[in-house]
Length: 210
Image (cartoon, rainbow, N blue to C red; front, side, top):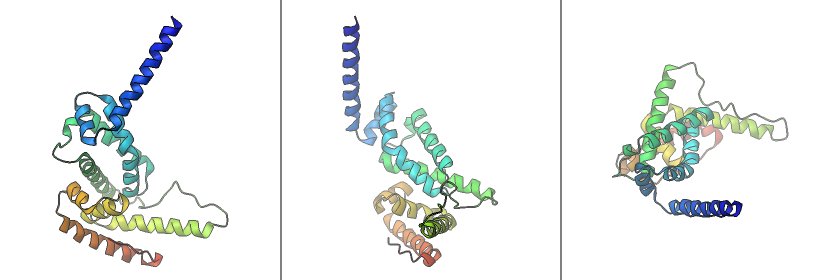
C-alpha cells in the first residue's frame, strides 16, 4: 500500500513539473486566455514573471515606499485574478499591465497631493552606517532624495514616460503603446522630462540620455 502511494505521489510530482513547465513556454497573452478559463497555474506563472518587476516600478515611482509598493502589487494581481476578462486582448499583456500600473500611480499622486504635510522622497529603509563609507552613503541618500523629489515634481505625462524609459527600460514603441500616444509625443515628453531632471540634479553632475 505504501509503495503504491509513493508511486502515486511520484507520478503526481512528475506530472506537476511537466504541467508547470508547459506553462513556462506560454506567452503572456496565452496565459491570460488560460486564466480566463479558470486555470490558476497560469496566474502563478504571470505572477512569477511580473511581481518583482512591478514591485520595483511602484517602489521607484512612489517615493520608495516599500509597503505601498507591496500593496499595489497585491492589488493589481487581485484585479487580474478576480476579473481576467478586463484584459484588453487587442494589446500586449505587458503594455496593458503597465498602463494599469501607471493609472494606479496617478491615483496615489492625487492622494499624496491631499496630504501636503507628507515628506516626499525619504527612504526610511536605508540607514547610514558608521564606517569608512559614510560620505558615500550620505551622498547616495542625498541623491536618491533629490531624484525622488525631481520625479515627483514632474507632471504625470512627463513622469510616466521617464519612468517607463529609464526605470523600466521600455522601448519608445512600448511606451507609446502603454500610454496610447504616438512615438513622436513620447520623444518630446522624454526630452522635456530628462532636461528638467538634469537641471534639478546638476549638483550631482548626473548625465541623463534619452
